[in-house]
Image 1 (cartoon, one colour):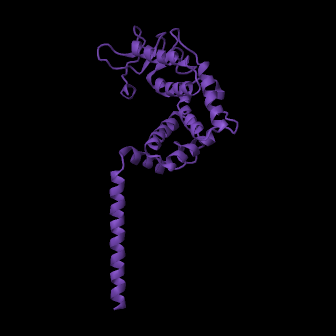
Image 2 (cartoon, one colour):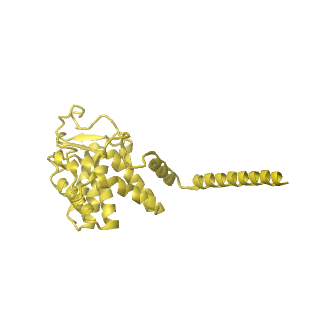
Image 3 (cartoon, one colour):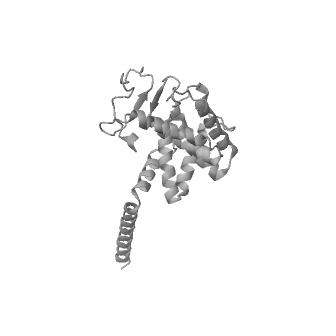
Length: 239
């Protein structure tokens, strides 16, 4: 009798475990796709470092894209795990004094601005001075960004006169957020100018699609000698 009860107990436990697994699986499937994608990314890169295993944290565009997606998920779900993931990923990238090593090269690469949005998020939540100082360092660096004759930001110091669609997505959201938060109203005319220049010069009039790059000087090896645009349309840039 005891053995029979033991077997029955095991069967009951197995059934409960199976039901719990099915319920958990159903709950996961009911989550918004954005939440499931964020969870998958955090499981794949648990330290928040979007790079090869064992490599040092790096201030990169890829890292910025990963954390921007995590931030979007956090704003919808308010999951503490999402926020802490961003904090733990950013902290190793800035010094205790808010210094940003990536800016010391003097390369003025707009791609460096991508992570500025996470600095703004962290400062907004914690009010820690190091996040403010790091964001301000990015903003100040942007004020010295070289420009073409029309006032458009070069994509980098070593790419004179070149503007790209990806640079708009990397620099302008941070530029606008910092300017709004810290009352630099004069910045918005400049931000608008960057988009207008690409609208006026990078859009293909025959298709309505945007070319990825535009070189006002037409000297880049990829630039059309009449228009200065690259030959490639850029689907992601359309977003």
